[in-house]
Length: 86
Image (tube, helix red, strand yellow):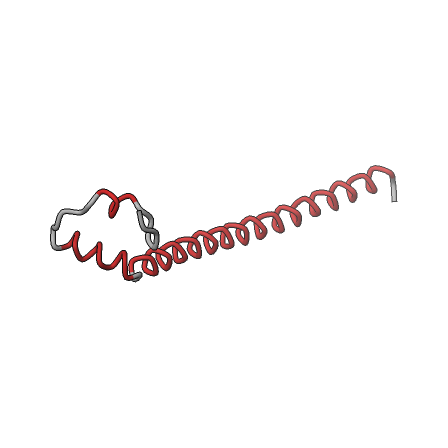
């Protein structure tokens, strides 16, 4: 086996290694994309759950009913956080 044959074989092996590493990189990027989408969906679900939980508290529910009935609200009813009193 001559030196040029050995160099050609080394070049082939290195090209194959690059191809394999690119395939693994592609798989890793796809998995990271899926994980990121799952985290975003989990965050959206948590936000909706928190909104529904807040809306179901008695103070907020009373205020929401008054809003839906188009009643006038006091400024403290608009500005004060749920569960806190002015």
